[in-house]
Length: 251
Image (cartoon, rainbow, N blue to C red; front, top):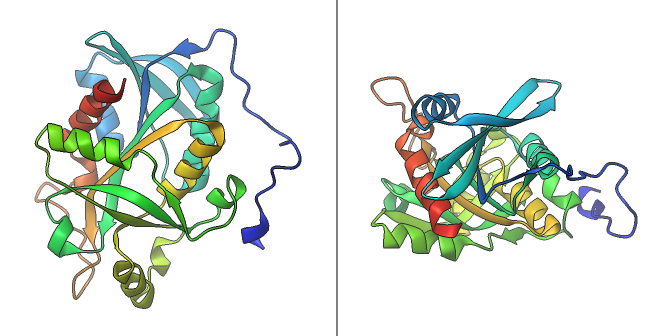
């Protein structure tokens, strides 16, 4: 069973091994939006410093130098397996121990999360990746939730803390499961954070995570929440400014 998948008694067949000339950075920002990637490349003087490869093609890694800090940035793909796999790949190319993960998430509680950045405190493990990095449990604690919330408060950014539901299958977010996770204190649903947090804990990395409302499940009918220009909340380039400020805060 997947709940028995964690094995810390034998070595992995493949392991990331850092290159001798790995590039040292203070923080690495990871997001999902191709529009934010375009905005960063065009507006922040970002230069490509590395490239992550998979069967889907190349994933450029960029460097932003800001106020004396070296901040890496790249766009990942949706889902815990590939998001975790690409962070593992950065351990080969980069010398870095702090990662910021941000993107859109479904909102499970419109009364408390509307118009606020969602900062997860724990992630329900309704996916498979995390079970290969830590023993089975219902939740994985998001260990730096307090630090992210501290940054939001210090900078006057409206936010809410709460649990998140990490699932592998967004087309199987059923009404009953929605009600169950909302009742358990989950304010968001997404596809990566449980796996990424488990991997970061296993590798001794610090993860800082926040979400913005991409769609609304807490409504009589699913609300896609697209804006007049056709962009959902996850493409809001202003959220990269939050991530960049957080990067300087924790660097």
